[in-house]
Image 1 (cartoon, rainbow, N blue to C red):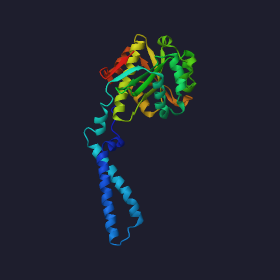
Image 2: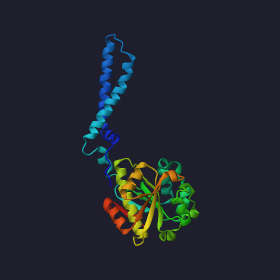
Image 3: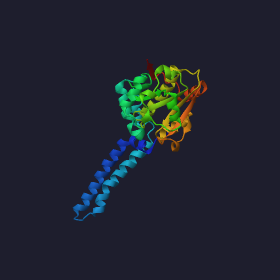
Image 4: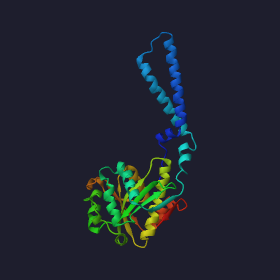
Length: 286
């Protein structure tokens, strides 16, 4: 998988303490300068007075960035990486499914499906949606792998239907889903995905999806997995994993690119080798 370089925001946040200290010092120095000038009965021009706070903020930000750039192990990394403890992947409860839907709202935009509608899908196939919780029982990530009736799936892949049009009648039961050769990966979400711990959760999520597929469907039958790219990050990740474009956004009513992954024992093994064995970090509970 591609290595993600730290952004300037992440570096600045890592050096926040040093930057805040520099800001306070700059405010103190600028205040002393203005006060000293005023004490000589010299009027300080208004533009200079207004510029001082912005200059202090700029100094603080610059110091924070420089400090974050030269920190070998940022405080946020040290504090966050072990905060979750051991993860557990299990079938989602109704409350966790609702929470996952709310987490996905900012990313799915016009394709956001309300929790009540997704709950109907879950009732049709209770084992379709899984959540990953940490040692504090906080929902950290979630995903769904659902089977859609072939007639609906054909139109969906062709771009003529969208997520908001999926009703319970279009969702297959658990037994029916195992007989399908086309599966839809839905509602993939990671809490705090832009943070260090969020990226750790993302690796656990990918491992959990692969493990769930192996446990629930096996690898004897070749299948195709479909997933919608609702963000640039998710699209980039799918491409690196091995997904290929199935239907471009300009041909779809939902205006998102639809990707597919040809699932075989060979492709599953190759993807697992990129992610690694995370069974020591996460356990499945049936």
